[in-house]
Image (tube, rainbow, N blue to C red):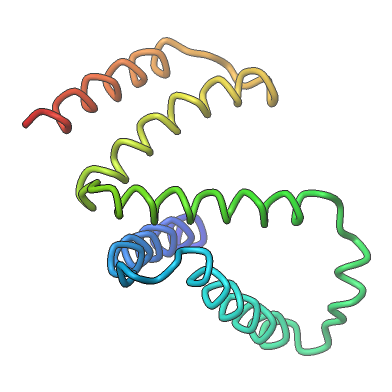
Length: 142
């Protein structure tokens, strides 16, 4: 059970800290300059963790297994980061931005799951989408 739960807890904790950091970025700092620091730290941290968790690891051997996904993921991550940074700069509240984007993401991923991965579109998912949309209405009411 722990192996099933700890990754979700890590994602939630990391996302909370991410939102705090994104909201705390200095107003005068260019988001792309900030991301050069962010990804430099992430690169070093990933490199250290790779060797800490793989004592006899060969990172070049790992790189030889690569496909296009890590390159596309790098571009996508910059899009995610910049989207959040500019959303906060344009007045989104930390208490609503994540909820709004998560609800839209949930709806989009239902279609992605159905179209790309042939996951079943069940009544529970359809009702869940409806609840997400109703929730968006209530979250954005003044």
